[in-house]
Image (cartoon, rainbow, N blue to C red; front, side, top):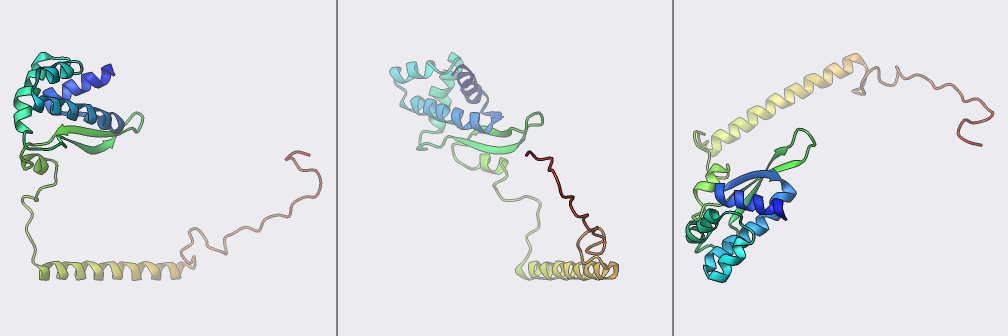
Length: 179
């Protein structure tokens, strides 16, 4: 529980943390509960939040800035973005972040907004590009099939059926696999 308290405090202080998927999902539950307590704003809610949040400055931020930011939102204050796998143990890592109160800038930063700098193609241009890519793919496949026939392997790797060795018949007698 101490590690989760530290992670919740860091998330609420910085707005974003990177951790494993499992920890991110657990910390998300606790952090959203703290923001809900901040929206209530009562003395009892503040005391309950201070049981988890380790810094009074962060608690003041939760009950001030974050409570106002998420006043109209009914839950879903955080987002988990699956990022990569850790190098040492291949654990799946995620970024846990607070969403934007209005839902605009945070999603564009996460890559879910419209692409900038990309030229929009008309349907005719898309169709022409698709046909030319299909024609190139068919030509490459036809050339590849011809080369397989010329080698006589039939596409089965080294040597095909001709290169397989005949197995020697087994000797009769005692087996080495137990009696």
